[in-house]
Length: 438
Image (tube, rainbow, N blue to C red; front, side, top):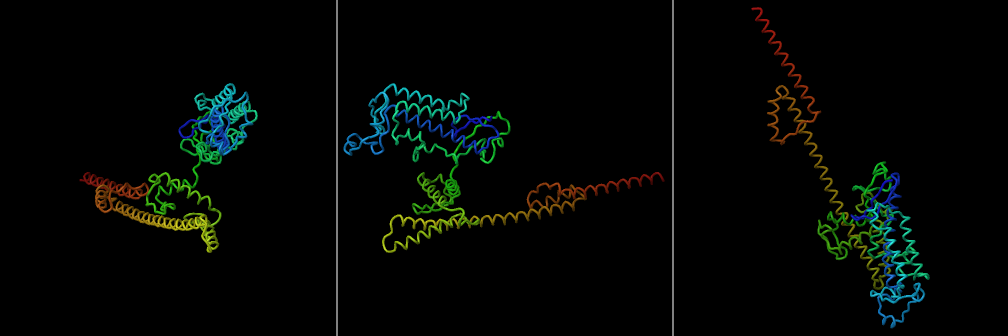
């Protein structure tokens, strides 16, 4: 079994075991479920601590109001009369005004707190140091313990709007909260190991090998939506040229690090809305600088024309005016994209032409060098040095020839050298024969 040390960022989370033959699609979902399950247990423990101190949740229309305001508005907590803790309630006012203050007695409070400590120990990060692997069964066991403790203290149950009951029924609404940002959707979960993405289409053994005793540190994160990736790429390249809210141009080369957080968030929301509204199956062309933009423009144009015709007689409602402004802004953005796309294509063509010219010059230089070496084969040292000195002012310092280019000159040099040695040998023999004859 391969041991995975799961982290979120640089913070340890839990240990998990999986066979090397496990599909990464299945493993990624499993890791995401355990990670989100631990977060659910932590949220429940936090709310149950408040439950033990200040009782059940107040109705949404009574939260944050003073007693005088509640009496003046004639509001009544109907669930507060039904959901009474076992053994009676002890009044302890909630300063925040979220709970009704009817807390359980000391005995029932200890039941809740003891269960909370046990559940926290099950999903604690200290399990990593102890070498204990956390499974989904352990997470479910912690949830069952918490549910049982609540049933003991509140046998009549909790109000339907209480966050503890909503957590148990998987109806919690975490939108706009920090807890919601920590949750990772299973479909958008992503595992990384050794600076490599563990792609869901492969197996775990494709990355870590077939050794079942391997231990790796895997980091889980949520895939950044396409709109945000596109936004950061555009801003980093200086291609986001227009601010649709302030209707002012953004200077070329401005990076996202130079913009205010509010401007960054606005640009991200705008780009996300445009990408989610487009239909990739219609109006897409391979050379279109913004695929799908044609379909969005046509649909928006039709809607704007209809709204204009319907509202010619009177004043346009604000929503219809906003749609028309968005249509006009989309047209301007499309023209900007087309302009940027044309400039990039022109730059690419210029670079290609420059590359071809450099290749031609390089070929001509190599041919001249080869011819010069061929001519200086009879006297390789002097001729080569003289030719090199003559060519360097014109072409700069020359690099050594490749093996293929040196083959012919070296062969010619060896042939001429052999002929010279043979001539010298014949001349010496003839002189020796003349001496003997005399």
